[in-house]
Length: 109
Image 1 (spheres, rainbow, N blue to C red):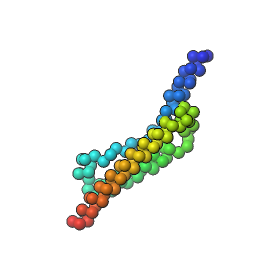
Image 2 (cartoon, rainbow, N blue to C red):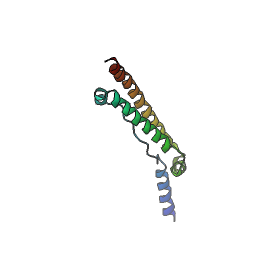
Image 3 (tube, rainbow, N blue to C red):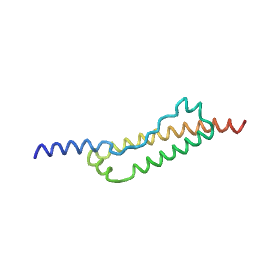
Image 4 (cartoon, rainbow, N blue to C red):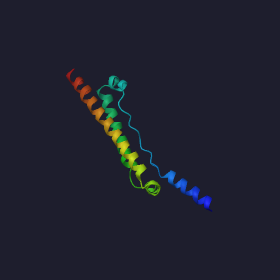
């Protein structure tokens, strides 16, 4: 019985660490920044907005939130969401800057 309780406690603790899987937002690469035109950048911005919506939906309260709280007081899921939002915001900022550069150049032509 003690062995079962020990195994159960270890599994519960390990399952509590960032149970939720948030979408990733890699930085804009040099290749993307050189090859994307204005419409391509706008498409990437729309895709990134969908990623941000997915992050918000994943972060909503559900059963995994409860398990995460039991395992590590929700710290793992909170950190994972915070990092996902940070990377998404950074990518969106890069895309908005690229949009200003590419679309302004396209309008001047």
